[in-house]
Image 1: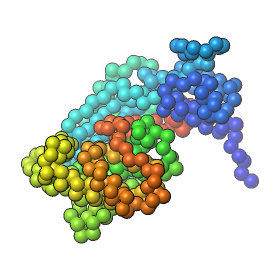
Image 2: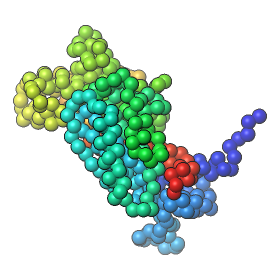
Image 3: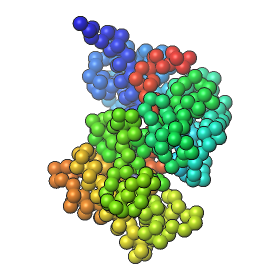
Image 4: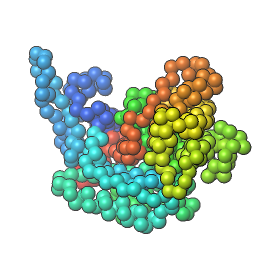
Length: 401
Ligand SMILES: [Zn+2]
């Protein structure tokens, strides 16, 4: 017979759950924690004093309550002391941030990059160099509890090896391992697909906060996605799930980078839009080029309007398939798809009316990303915090706190 969870297991679980509330909600009263977690007041008090002793949270009197009686203490994250490193390697930019508990961006550096493959050595060297500079500027009592990176491409579950993507020279790039070695923090580097992590970010602290079932679509050079089902990200067997950009919507259609034809990405991606709008010239690509098409359409440019309408047709078809399969409460358009959706919402909606089944469609909400360009970086930070939220004291002990 297997024994049930011990008192210690329960305490660890509750410590993590309490820290998660403080991390995601910000300063929160003990009374509110008591009601949200369904635990009694003395348990909440014991848990908060453990987390306070560990230096993860601090308690203080609220400023004004306006109510009579003894005010409930407010628990706030120690954002300046406990932090993670988050990295974002996109097709057009790289970003490094030091993010405090509670999701506060304490320090951030963003640099544009030229499209094309990267050299692992050079990239890991640049990223770790920036992180070291940031670390030198921190106070002596700060503690790094996690590291994670968002990359455009498919990442193998478990070891952070990038298997495919627009920026790769090799078939297997041991990105997590190399970055971890160069950082020398003694911490593993978690690596995730950028669209998956952006979905997680919107679900944790963006437009999808509190939504348990959502589909997030992310556009940059290609189209990626992340599916949150029942509050969890669907990664698939080996971590490559959620590649909604390679769902075929137009058999025999435009050639796709993956080798197939008529993928959502091939019909809706940046290249398709710019080509249809007659604007695929020279170095003019990326978000600004897409925005220029949407702006031109707004001003009455017929060619731009037709290009957006064409793209909206295929986007609506793709979204209809996803809605029928996953029955999300919300579909979120992020990255450059934010602008594309805003410029083609009528076509997307009419395709949904034609192709999505009524029960799935009736209460569906279509939204644009709240975190915008920060979604992938915020998602990497959330991934980096996941260990400390699962077992705060263990992680802190390991980090030397
Ligand atoms: Zn494809």
